[in-house]
Length: 404
Ligand SMILES: [Zn+2]
Image 1 (tube, helix red, strand yellow):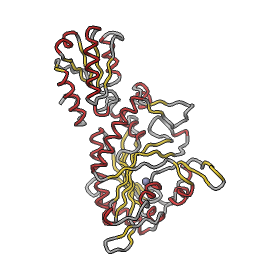
Image 2 (cartoon, protein in one colour; image 1 turned 90 degrees about the vertical axis):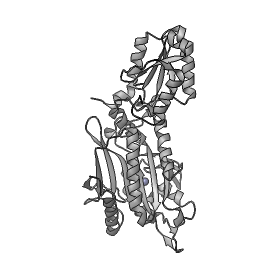
Image 3 (cartoon, rainbow, N blue to C red; image 1 turned 120 degrees about the vertical axis):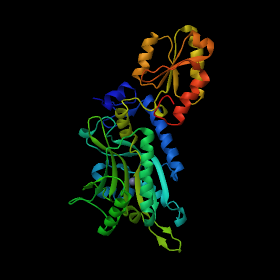
Image 4 (tube, rainbow, N blue to C red; image 1 turned 120 degrees about the horizontal axis):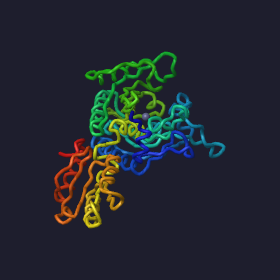
């Protein structure tokens, strides 16, 4: 059975070291390259859909998390505070919403600015017990594809529906297969903030957004501040994980006293929608490694092209082609004279490299390359410019087919 911990190590995606600590994986060059491509895609997708990106620090004063309610309702999942001086303690944040509330408060807001969609791929920290930590699926240092939408109550339905559509787009590009949707509701005996009326309203708004999708209702799984839609995936072992989420929150806008000037000049209170299109980079890649068995679509493959000269006679042409590929924006390398051509081709296959360009004396003389596509297909020799166009086209279109 595929296990992302084993395959992730073989592919050089991430590394765990007891000296760094459990649940604190280190992203190696291959993993960082793939993640960089995915992050760039997500920022671009969000930018095109009306999101504005910010950066905020992964820690803040204790008072910030008292104000947000996290210390009251979520303290068990937070690391203990760091005492800086007698009257100053800093805490690692367990979520980005407190900082994004401060973004909202950075100046006065008018109804004309709403919906205000504030996005950040930012760090947050959860004090998970060491027994539940494993590979990338559950970690203590989390980089979340996060955003908070501040909008009028009347816009919540359209905003949640738009988020669900955007989740579909991101999943299609990445090759994520959803195993189910869950509407997480309040349950008995748990700690929740907010009035019954606001919970009922929030639940009915989420039900309406899910009207033409199939989903299950799960009481007791809501966030402490509101109900949510969780979008589930299944790993290779058949375990379910929440990847994407949309959550409604009437509580934080009240705690932070968020307001806007409405069209009649009076003060309105926005609703906060927490949403993640693909979850944390850690859990996403834990899933993607298993779902694709390491063979990522070319657009986020760590190495997209490996160039192999057959012998020393073609190494100059191979180096020139490798340089042209880098210039064209591809992630490419050249492996020369280390073992037989067959061994080098097998090594590239083991790394799931989408394209291997073999250059012999004949191809070098003709200014051509012979492309071998992941999976074993060999294309007839073609001019180098055509090969770069082919690969660049597949990458640019984020196609899952390696040959158009
Ligand atoms: Zn949030």
